[in-house]
Amino acid sequence: MAEKFDNLEEHLEKFVENIRQLGIIVSDFQPSSQTGLSQKLNFMITGLQDIEKCRQQLHDINVPLEVFEYIDQGRNPQLYTKECLESALAKNEQVKGKIDTLTKFKSLLISELGKIFPEEMTKYKAIHGDDPPS
Amino acid sequence: MTEIYSTLFGQNDTQPPTGPAALGFGPGKPLPPMPTNQAPVAAQIPGQLGDEGPTLRKPGAMNEPFYLLRELPVGNDLTGNTNLITHYSLEHAFNKFCGKKVKEKLSNFLPELPGMIDCPGIQDGSSLHSLIEKPPVCGNSFSPLTGALLTGFRLHTGPLPEQYRLMHIQPPKKKSKNKYRHHRPQDPLPPETPSDSDPKKKKKKRDDDPDRKKKKKDKKKKKNRHSPDHPGLTGSQPNSLR
Image 1 (spheres, rainbow over the protein chains, first blue to last red):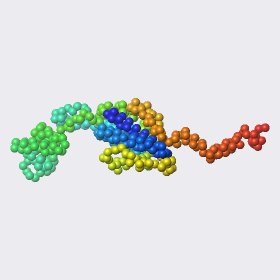
Image 2: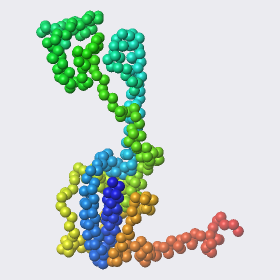
Image 3: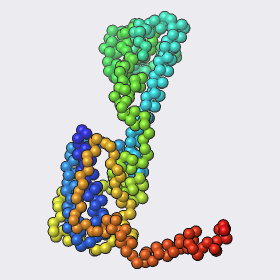
């Protein structure tokens, strides 16, 4: 899996470097640099071909759209991962709190109902069985 | 719904029973015995009500005095009670992203990428969002440019006009110490690259300008006039000690 990303990363780095050099040539063009320009243009096309080949290996990779918003704002996309993990942990703790509270409520309710309706609660426990404390 | 109650409790009346007895909240009255001919109908009821959540217990079961007692839902092993980060072995990722401070800028994530990437993409039309909204035309294969096609790339000599200069192109920063990053191969620049692109030579060109030489000379003269070591100034300075 990491090899696929490394391969794509390498091709992208080469492509970007090629484009950067192309920009330098074009910014102050001289007649002697025409062949170099043609070479760089063809490198650009082969770079795109290589990137196109990498696409087939990564067809099952899904990227959340929210990450694109971070990149468009010039922010580090790792912040998205960080915020996802933090919100997952917070939600996990919140749900755990709810489960614990409801478990305590259930045990209190059963004990109080057992005091008020002892016969009915014994029948209830016989039907449902003794629910193990969750 | 009232028809179901009549079949459950053996009432032959078509009209639904009224009052609390119909709802089973009577003061402990014994239920009428189930007629045998209605047992198959009663047995079909749980199937009909299957789409209303947990199935009702069979009326034949000893559910007295409970009414509409449902099965408990099947316990799920994975609930919010467990630490999901530990369950999915994400401790390393959590410590990596949440334990340390993650830098804000995009250039910290991509240090080798040239250009001013920390600016919002909307400003220069390079946003990924616009790429999703208006995807480029795909499907055609990439073919190298032939000689005839390359004639379209014959450029005029000289520097670009100011308005077209990409001043935001920056050389890549220092390489990050990352074992997954491959060593960048140094593409040899073509031998015919213009000498003007070399920064040292650019500086020399600047120095060769006659106007700049004159300006520098003037500046030097002004500095020398105002320096305390200048012989013409020691007598004229009011604060000089004698």
